[in-house]
Length: 215
Image (cartoon, rainbow, N blue to C red; front, side):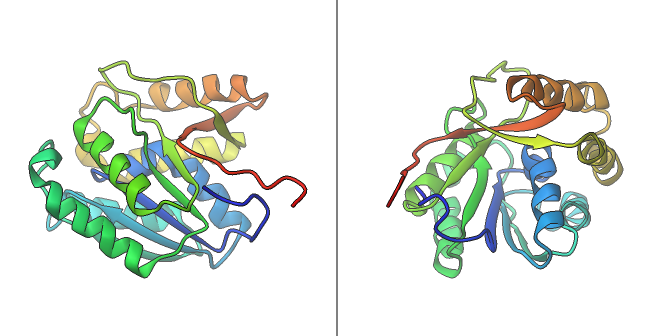
């Protein structure tokens, strides 16, 4: 939840179950935010991929996606695909993040994402951060779980193109995947742009939003 207009965006939290989730789901939004607010604080948490090539990719990528920001990134070593079995560790990591961060905005997976790791992290975020606006980003995948988003961040063509370039540049370990290409990323952004009268956009689910209109 959030009181709209109550305070500027000075601090945001971005979380992902895997390295590249944040960049795929909300990379354009991060670029737009960081360009608009130099020095913004970004606390990022990724649950898996720590200690190897994937963590190196993620650190370089998020530094590029958050230009001029004060970035604090933590990458853990939970096994990919097994978050339900490591629930206590994931919960402890989210609670630790909550204990040191009181963000104005949270970027996280959607609670109805078909991937169990994404969905589990989303559920943890909305429980730990009860009084914050959580925007649930979407990741196109084989499961066909894209829904009807309710919030949009328009992206200029320059930002949309830059997002795709950075994804291709910083995650070489993913280039072999059939869905990891320019057409997929720009195609979804174009569709979401049509839905909000923009050329490109990223779209988000919102679990709960409190309005204080005229208050």
